Image (cartoon, rainbow, N blue to C red; front, side):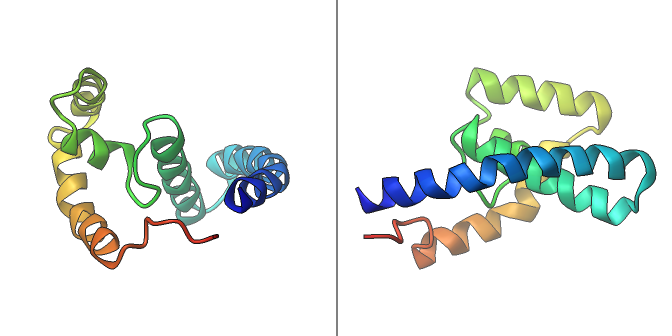
Length: 114
């Protein structure tokens, strides 16, 4: 119960900041430094993976899609990304899988508030 209450309180603060972050990312995409935009897009990618696709917060949608490539949604993501860069999801997974393995080995995905 504590975790749910803490999560709710955190989300009440984070959602307005997330909206602001999206607007800043949009502005940076038009006029800002490429590195800042890339970091923002990467963070948004991980957020979408964790919330929409029920994936790990430390993994991109592309890497997750490659791990779950038998699922319909994953095949769709792979098909779309292959239109822009052939083998993108496989390369993303090769780059990110060691991180996923380490986090799971250390148990960092487990509940932290008791």
